[in-house]
Image (cartoon, rainbow, N blue to C red; front, top):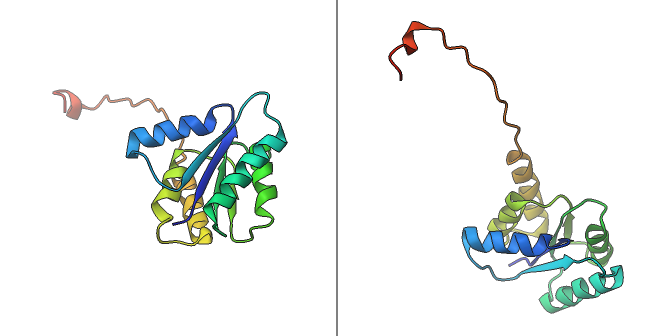
Length: 142
């Protein structure tokens, strides 16, 4: 099972954890690390590296909140020593669920492909259009 580490600014990671547990229940081998106000880069890196060493895995999926933000950049730095790991920025619930769904059977590369596909599929813009229903066929309702 491929480990997943979710990290982000403020309570981002904790909020995703609570939402995940609400929707699908607690999960194993997934870690949530907040980058709270007052925490330095070194402290975040130490927390992430501790989790990485505890997993004893060469393949880890990192899900960070903002591309280029400190949690993302720190995960990228750590992943430089782990060529089979993958780092995502812009994490959302569909990405997390895709990672959880695939982690039992796929490599980090396969999981990454699935995450990208789900992220694209689950992003949509609702187009609110006005319907002019002047037709007699709607006169009596449905």
